[in-house]
Length: 468
Image (cartoon, rainbow, N blue to C red):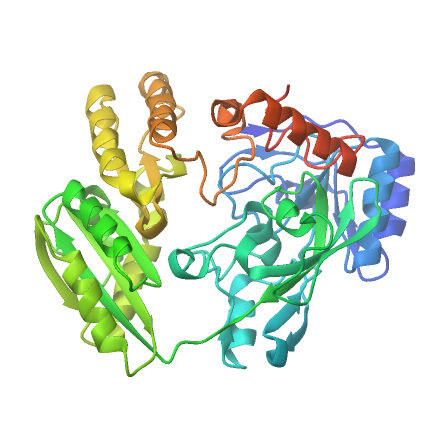
């Protein structure tokens, strides 16, 4: 879906924005240059009125201040890898591209932290940390291209979150700019600190609706001595879901526990070099890390928990090459499904781990009831499942079935004590469902918080929260 309609921005504002971005920045006003900044991975598009590309914190402050005073919507943007429409602008809005704020400011091994700007990719952060024997816990499968700013905006996680936590759990402090253009610092340089309210955790996951983050202090974790990867094959999804609850109930927490259903296995087979079973109803990819001296015992404990009714096979990867192939299989899932259904409906929901079997069975029932193909995979260790409805939104008949099916998927998740989004965010794609999860008092408080940070409502308007 795209919207090409735009209203020209006032010349006085364009002149002020050009001055605000500074010598190291740029202001894009040509239609062809603006076009590339009007989309994200939701496949929605709207043409911005201008694209401001500042290169430092002071320039961001100046750009935000100019838009605040003019009352013009401003949409922060990284590399546009999000799937919820959070970085798609309103037609004619100013896009604030943060790609030129791409510096790793410093790595501090003694205090186990790294300071970086929002335009740095997740992969670059991992490489900088690894050079000192550390890693940053969030590891989304788009790590090579997604930016730190995007990770912060939607509280991204990835496979390692099951053991090491999400972005919120691994950020110590932020530098940001409020909706008035005022500079703001939050957090501490220590792992303990309770002075004032926790604005750091509030800003993370706010999708650029409260403030623009220009720098983050990240908590690093030492790289493990050793790691092992297992693959467990199950007769059906229900057996795999029961295995997840057993694995997560024993003392050894895996550093990754990924779930792939039968439909996903078949669809990804042609895109992967890994040897995938032909009769599998579901597959778990399990990674265990820790001390080299203890690894064998840890793997044995996890393998024992993975075994049970409906388990066809549990085995460790034979060598490093097979580990790479297995993870390539997991990372190939989203591209493979895009080839099958270019405009698939991709939802990332989460339920308590103990309710995983009910979720999987419920999704199968909805698929049969509506005649909609549903393919599931994701981070089973924390109940975060990517539910993919393979339909074409341009086909009216398919959408006639898909819309009530999706509504019932969300109702199922909430009945199981779950949440509508684990890590992909809300954006515009889920905004109208948010009131099913949040009560009216919570929504009123959140709108009041938004007004304090952004009194004119210019920061990413129409995203994250439904109107009151």
